[in-house]
Each structure stands twice: as C-alpha cells, then as structure tokens.
Image (cartoon, rainbow, N blue to C red; front, side, top):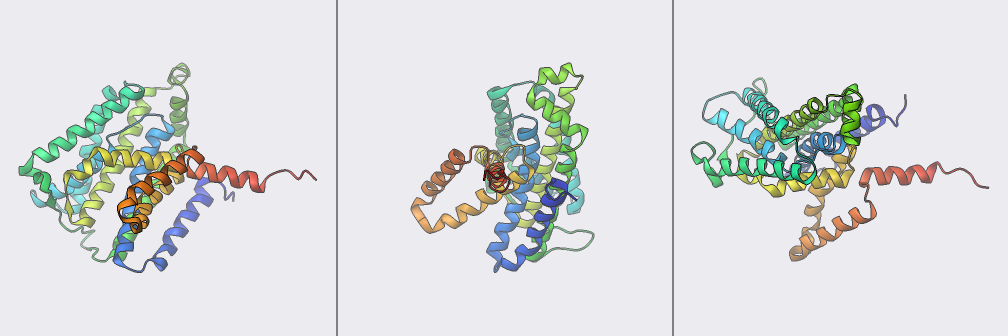
Length: 318
C-alpha cells in the first residue's frame, strides 16, 4: 500500500485526526469551533473542485450555503417536513437551480465569471433579506432540531461526529472524482478549454457537473449548520463569507483536496486564537495571512509537501 496516495495515507491521516481530536477538546466552545471547521472544510472541498481543478472562480457559494440553511428552516417550520427530508429537498432544489444557471454563467471567463457568480450571490442575499414572510428578513428565523430516523443529536460531541462524518464523505467523494476520468477531464479544462475541446471533451458538460456538485455540497453543509445552530440569518449569504471560502481554498492550496481542509482549519481557528490581541486582532490576522500568501504562494499544503520532499529526498552529494 502506497501511503502517499490520497486514498490511503492522506485519508487515513484525516480520519485519525478526526478520531483523536475529541481527546483534546475540553469544552463546548472548542467543540463548536471544531464543528464549524468541519462544515467550512466540506464547502471548501467542493469549491476546490470548481476553482482548483476546473479553474472556474465562484464568488457566490455562500448563497448556496444559505439556501441549504433556509431550505431546512422553511420546509420544517412552515411545511412540517422531517429534517432529513427537508435537507434532501433543499439539496435537490439547489442542484436544479445551479444546473439552470451554470450553463449561461460558465460561458463567462476570468473576472467576468467572478462578477457573474458575485451577482448570483448578491441576488440570493437580497431575496433572503427581503422575503420576510418566509425567511424572517434580516432578523432570521429559528430552525428545528435535526432528527435522524427518530434520533436527535443533542450534545456537542454527537454533533461533532455528524460534522466530521459529513466532511469525510465529501473528501472521499472528491478524491474518487478527481482520480476518475471525470477528474482528468476537469484538469484538461483547467489547462486549456480549447485543447480539451480539440481532444473531444465536452467542456460545458464537465463545468456544469462540477458546479452542481460543489453547490450541493455547500447546500448540505448549510443545512447541517442551520440545524446545529438552531437559528439562521441572511448573513451566511453575505459576499464576505464567499470571499472567506475562496480564501480558504487558495490559502490551503488549489487543486489539493486536503489543502482545502487545512485552509478551512487555519481561517476558522486562527481568528479565535488572535482574540488575545483585542482591538488589533484583525490587523494581526491580516499580517499573518499576508505572510502565508507571500512565503507560501502555492498554498500551505503544497509548499509544506515540497519542502518535506526536498528535505528527505535530496541525493547524497558526499
């Protein structure tokens, strides 16, 4: 068994960290941070498929996250659907919506594509804020407790395992996708769409496919967040959250599934650690972020992997 392959060593290491982490979590606040890390990482894994592997930027994925959250909230509160049915219905709805808008929006390139997805996210945010009869408006709305076949998770420990289980599933699906013929087609699209089309690859089909997959992952993560938090507001559809998600992907290392996870860990945990700086917290955080990007411009995981590779595999010159 080759432990350097993502399906073996990387996945085993991720599962091992998930298994032992509760031993170091002492209180509800630390569990809350761990749960948020897992849900952010799940969104980033899907977003990395779109940005890192396919080369299609999206500044509107916070909108899909919020749609998942509000789908669960509205369908359980107003229509009496069981939480699991509400989550699946929301995922189907977001999948259909993303499929409809993907074809026209993915015809755009570069900064035009970024502006198009930004506009999509802004529209979702405006709708959630304005449709107060359904969404509660800017004040938000409460969300029913999650039940899974009659079982209701009530402790932070139980929610931790739900969140990391969902993350593990997203990582597993992502690794299988990128190591399949679909993944090779996505990398070809990233390299050169013209060359990919010349080789007979239906570039539009694969771009739409990965857009839908990443949107559904974000939607399901949003639903879980809503049920865990018990309350949701339109702030989760905010443009700044979309930027934060993209930054997590870039910081961890684009075209790196585990790098996306690491990026989510850093950008979720570091702000909590820097609270000791009080009024200078954001200034210090910005400096740390700039330093990481400048000295690790390929991303955290690729840079560390390259350093370790050179460190331990240099030929003996003696």
